Image 1 (tube, rainbow, N blue to C red):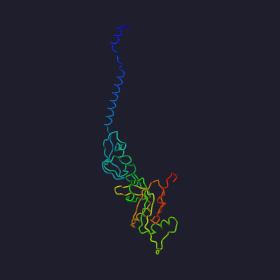
Image 2: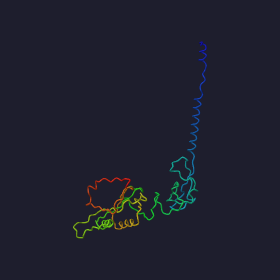
Image 3: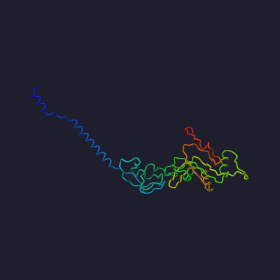
Image 4: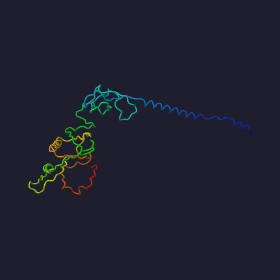
Length: 268
């Protein structure tokens, strides 16, 4: 090849490949389009129903009880709510509802409730009674826990715990004769084990326990006698403890105090 031909090739401008530039341009356009769509979606809202006023448990909802506000379409699932008042008008409040509450499906029921529902959604089992019990001796408590109930008898009277326990176990009660030199010792008696917790009012430090009518009567009787009462937070999957279990300071043993807790298995 001559020197002149080589020079002509060097001076001739090569045509550039347009494909990379086209792809980059398309990418920028697509990104811009999706950005605009996301911005528009974020700015969109939809109606949800809230309470216009307080509605007591069990009352049928009317249009005057409800109002509609707009919330962003993309919001936490806890704020999903109900889109139209027509979906709930005529239904019944499943618990006490407060003004400005975001109405959720679990807050209403199609049928008039047959019995009260506690704020946490728990209901009383038919045939049982709710008994308010102070949580001062228990501490933090939830409705997933169980409660043991006991009382203290400073007098040491055997007929308060021992005789009832003996009768329940089919034994003859042991009662100290009046002239015995041994003085009865104060003791603690565990009365009930594993009572179900219906609801805990943390501010009032009161737990509402589900008991049988007889158990409830026993609690009121002990309170009428002025005996100090106490409670224990107890796991819902723990074994039921013996009823009317008495313990005084003279019965304490090192073996029992240091014994490990028996593990709970699936067979129990």
